Length: 167
Image 1 (cartoon, rainbow, N blue to C red):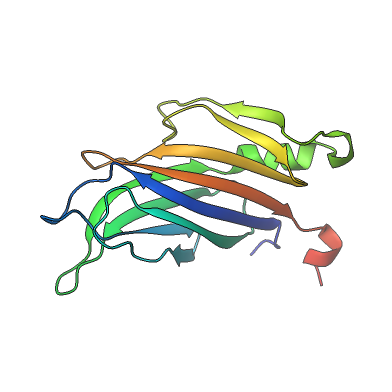
Image 2: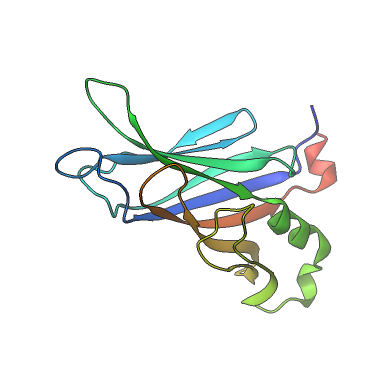
């Protein structure tokens, strides 16, 4: 196992136009996976446009791994229904953080832009920025394997100095 290289803070902001899985809508929640780590948001009752604003922090040992996101509809008496999934490449955020000297950056500076492509789930161009002393990336992901839905996320990278990681 590699050492810890940093923390990925993922703010799950909201869902947009998620799929209906029940007559009254859906009871969505989001599952994030990075390698073997798995975190979940709370369940939002009867909403296809849920607002979470929940921050989940994942430890990162291998920045080349994709962050996997899945949305489910919480069901009481049966298995939760899948409501789409997406994958995010965190490497651009990590690379920007490692390549850019923080002292020379002004707040709000765009370091890198990632365009939607066949290999990512971005609904729109996403920018890696230097904001309030942290490297951050806002994005809207189009969910796959579902009739509709997008998830808005804010990623933030926290580097761990090599000396601290080896303690």
